[in-house]
Length: 142
Ligand SMILES: [Fe+2]
Ligand SMILES: [Fe+2]
Image (cartoon, rainbow, N blue to C red):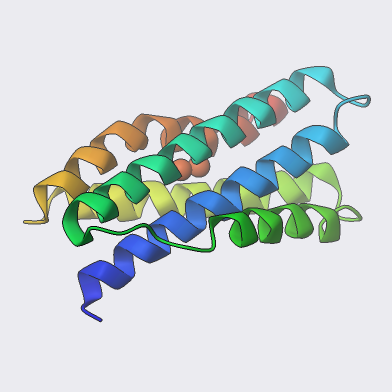
């Protein structure tokens, strides 16, 4: 399998994991912090939409779907569950770092000569990832 195809599958996988992870976090914070719960829910929906865009991109280029979306979503939910004992601040710091990494990776790719359909998807998702990376600062005011 070529690197581009692998990259596309990996991107889809990370979005599906993110969908499940944010969904799990949203459910956990429902009674403790309604505002945060809503934000996580919104992020989960955005990650799912990103996944769908990568999926469409893959289908357009290779004529088939990437499988295992459901399994990866479940993996994200499980990750949220395992992360439960971690204090919120520490947990959100980890998420901020992961989202910031995603932002930097996307920005780097946008400056490269890449497949146009893939580039289009990256342009759509970048503002959301920037938003995801900024939640920690918004919540903890730093
Ligand atoms: Fe995303
Ligand atoms: Fe994200």
